[in-house]
Amino acid sequence: MVNQKKIEEAVTLFLEGIGEDPAREGLRETPERIARMCTELFSGMEEDASVHLQKTFSVDRNEMVLEKEIVFYSVCEHHFLPFYGKAHIAYVPDGRVAGLSKLARTVEVYARRPQIQEQMTGQIADAVMRYLKPQGVMVMVEAEHMCMTMRGVKKPGSTTLTVAKRGCFEEDTVLQNNFFQMIKETKTE
Image 1: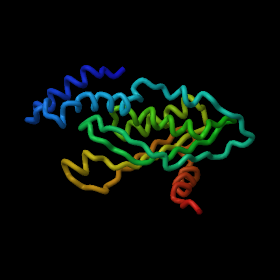
Image 2: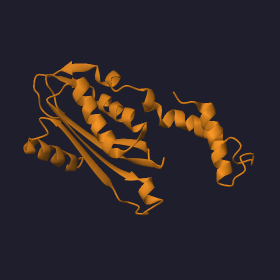
Image 3: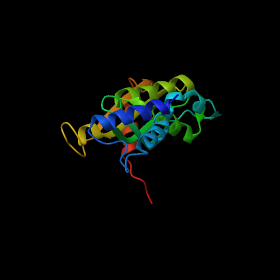
Image 4: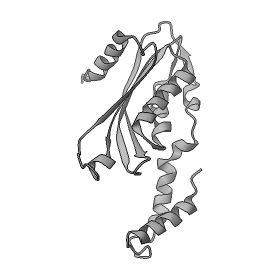
């Protein structure tokens, strides 16, 4: 659970550490604002993905399901700067499917933690395998990292892609290629 008082104290020390006056009019309420923001940004620390993936529906056919372009925002655990992008999740059911919003909620559980993209991608795939019990799952995450764009190497627009494959997706290149092709397909209006 987020300890708002400790965050407020830490932000006050931080402001003093960078040479600011925490009592200055524009900064007076900043420690409290940041503490409230942390409650929202790190709400995934207290959530369990199983809650979202428990409700399932039976299906007659076990054909691939893809939920693509799930927008997420996260915070890099190394620099505490944002990274954001889109997640794509495909799975081959084993007689049961989850409601579509449940996949997006699963992404949120893991995105709303101090995180690295590589780990988050695997956590999403593992949660879908563990709780939905499909024949296989494949997850691709594409994100821009502010720790690379506004500091350090300073390369805005660069994107990092990570992929996790479980079950039938691990060796089946036809399934993998179908996944990538479906992600590329544009929406028709």
